[in-house]
Image (tube, rainbow, N blue to C red):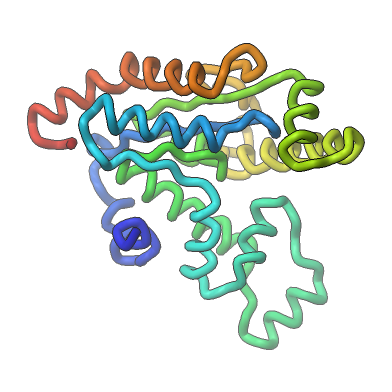
Length: 240
């Protein structure tokens, strides 16, 4: 855990961000529609990779990033969460924070998020759930970018069961959360890049496969796409 929080030390982060691109990764990003159990998938993917590659370095990351970025910026957790949720501070709130010395602009929050997420991905051995990871890490060669989807009604039933919601509340939650997640992916892309679907190496239908099956597919695709490079780097002492 202490090593994990090194990512939020500016000097350490700068050293990772300035490293040679050939040493970046490996990383798996998982984007998901709401209600597709991506956290459970990420946990099992990390466990499987540690077993298959005989290491303990792989871990999955999700909301821990928000807490750590808030610490890095010396602001409230909710401020970073608000950026992720697609909300902006109103003019009065911004003015109050500015006069109190506590103002942090959305641009600075965005910059911190991008630096922290990219440094984690460049360091490697990460399964990253959401957080705009597919946009931020798409330039890393040793990477696999996964999208998990499912029909709306299936996801609504899953959300109703897991969050004890009514069908109306679950439907509204899914529509709003999906929109925010798609917006977040776009936030970290060039303005003229609109084809989100082309960012992903594979899209998997959660309704048709169990969490274990999806985890196995991701590990298999990772091995086919990335492990050949990793084995060569292992031979020369770059990984594991």
